Image 1 (cartoon, rainbow, N blue to C red):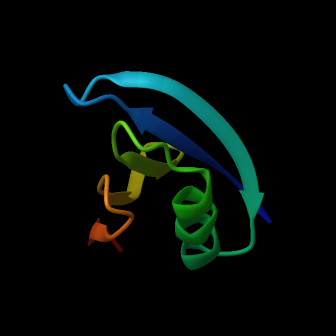
Image 2 (tube, rainbow, N blue to C red):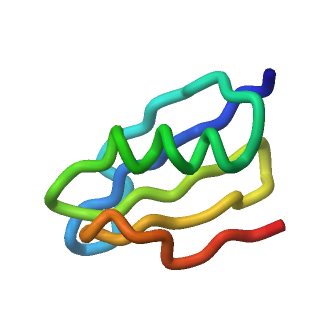
Length: 66
């Protein structure tokens, strides 16, 4: 299990909050971010300095990095 950070973004794309989750994989972390997402902005998922992916306001993955 690894720690991932879910950054909540406001409508202006600035960080409005963060949640740390422990997940087994990048896909599990992206799923957790989709559930935790807020209606006013998207979310970004990071593991240390590596961006895992981003989910837009509609809850759809915009990108996933490997």
